[in-house]
Amino acid sequence: MKNMQGFVAAGEVVADERARIAFGKTGVRRDDRYAVAVNDDGEILLTPLVSIPKRELIVWENQLVRQDLAEGLRQSAAGEVVSLGSFEEFADDEIDEEDDEV
Image 1 (cartoon, helix red, strand yellow):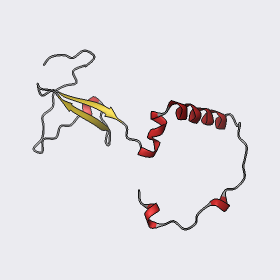
Image 2: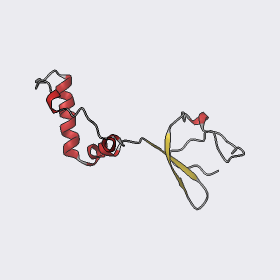
Image 3: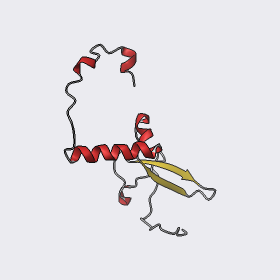
Image 4: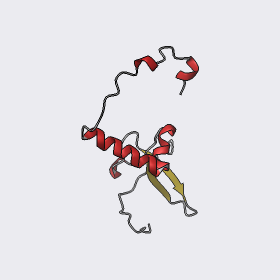
């Protein structure tokens, strides 16, 4: 087995009858997510992933939004907030079934 720079051998595993391989020895935990890539030699590369809701993607794609969010969180943690009162009058108590679908 050739060594790839930055990788450390973690042992040997055998696929079970359903072609599954256990990676517990490597620190993988239940429900961890990975992108899987395979090269021409059959080497498999697993890259850890974290999934986020699409509606939150703008925070990662837009630096200005990310900076403004960080500043807002900093201000909130420092107690630099002003109450604008209740927004209850703007609440829509009736939710359409279409609006409730995700």
